Each structure stands twice: as structure tokens, then as C-alpha cells.
Image (cartoon, rainbow, N blue to C red; front, side, top):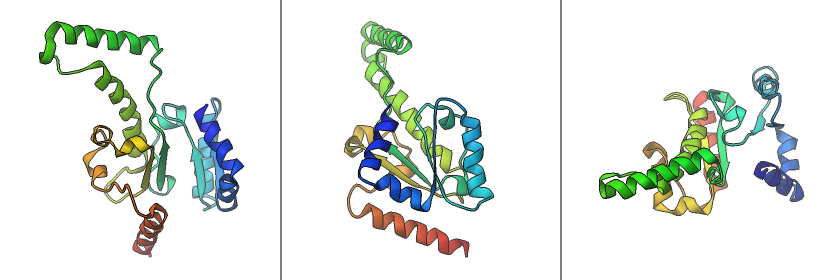
Length: 187
């Protein structure tokens, strides 16, 4: 699984160990996500300690759970979660769209490729929406993939997020300043 590869890579270059020094780390597994989520919440609400939660797009923890306020101050997405093209349901849907496109031409505006991309960005936009739940909520959103530099992909991110996208400069400095600003607001 890609999540496990990222974690292994971070361990090999000691980033993961640095995270462990300052935050309690939780990693989504296929089983017991409710128990994991409760431990994550307790760490933040009861222990008053920071925590990191590693999840996958489309996993149990990414569906229907809100991480408002202190439960979600950063969303880091690595890669683009394109669905498996060998999935029978997706194959059939794309074939149907292609058939309709051939039948109606330009009068049928949807294409199988735009449908496929929309499935990916639905997951990304859900991930973003899990952490920013109301007008006074805030979070850092890191979209890590070179393809976010392409207009066709950026256009599928909500407009209110597009306005804040930074593609150059010191990201670490930007994030540090962001959290310093919001910490002062609460004092």
C-alpha cells in the first residue's frame, strides 16, 4: 500500500522518528478504525497532546468523519488518488460515457477521462473538507504532487482553496507563520 511505502521512506530518512518526538502517531489499518479514532481524539482532547493520523483516501477514516477545530489542523495529501482502472464498475461507466459521446458528439459534454478525474478529485476535496468545517476553522492543506502545477488539476480544487495555493517559496516558513498567526488569535 502506498501509505506504508511513504511511512517506510520517512522512517528510512528519520522524519518519522522526528514526528514521534513531538506527536503521538496513529496509522489507519483495515480493522479497528473506531478504536483508533477514539484514541486519536482522547490524545487531543484529554491528554491535550498533538497527534498525527495517517489515513488513506477512501478508507474508513476518510468517509463521513469530521476533524473540525483542533482535531484537524493540517491535511497532507501525497499523490492523486485515481481509482483503479481495472475496477469493473469504473470500466463499465467509462464505456457507457464513451458510447454516449460517440452517439451524441459534442452535445454530450462529459468524457470518460473527465469522469475518471472527477472521481479522484472528489476524494481530494472530501479530505480538504474534513478539516475545515466552519468559517472560523482553519487548517494547512498540503497537496504534494507535481501535477498540482497543471491548470486542469488545480481547476478541480474549490475556488476558495485555489486563491491560497503557493507553488514556490519556503513552504515550511509559510506553515510556521500560519500557525503563529492563528495561535496569537486565540490568546
